[in-house]
Amino acid sequence: MDKLLQGIVHFRKDDFEKHRSLFSSLSREQKPHTLFIGCSDSRIVPGMMTKTLPGELFIIRNIANLVPPCSMSDDFVSTTAALEYAVKVLEVENIIVCGHSNCGGCASLYSENNSDVPHLARWMELAESVKTQVEKEAPENDPAAREWMCEQINVVQQMKHLVSYPYIAERFQAGKLEIRGWYYIIETGEVFGYDRNQECFSLLN
Ligand SMILES: [Zn+2]
Image 1: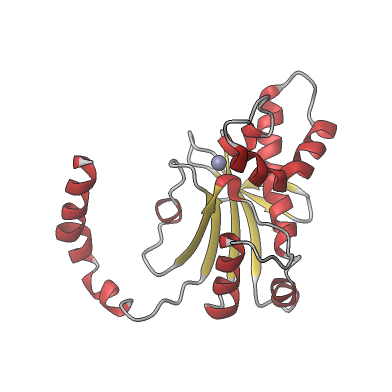
Image 2: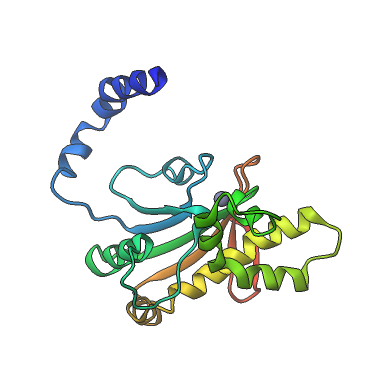
């Protein structure tokens, strides 16, 4: 805890001062250009990896960067609410779904026993179709290939879920909204982007 307390004091004295006018301009409004949908994983730091400043990214984080497909629900749907706000109210220009290497959420799809984490297991049902596709396509007895395939196919699946929302599909088809899929490698810092035409990920340079 001490580390966190020292951190907020350092932030106020150093980083905040450096960007004082930016924070002042953001005090009553935000106009982020991008909705970033990423995993809750502590190793994913969207602002750092994109070199963006406060006010630029609207961020949704959840286990395994999932997007529930469009459906009317009376439940408490935080990801869906944040999507609506980002696209309809803030009118972001881009949506990025960012998966990553060594994703614990994706790994849990293959866990033998999730009885201790029932909500996680239920949440990951959103990626069941990913598991099915990986089982068809991954080489047998190659857990590493299965891992990265699952994480990458998951990104593509969530991009599809995004356009199941009529207000997103409409803006996407009209060219008012870009939807991109990224895959981040923790140990190299590399980001691979999904190419819709080639149907594969390639290094973003
Ligand atoms: Zn993850």
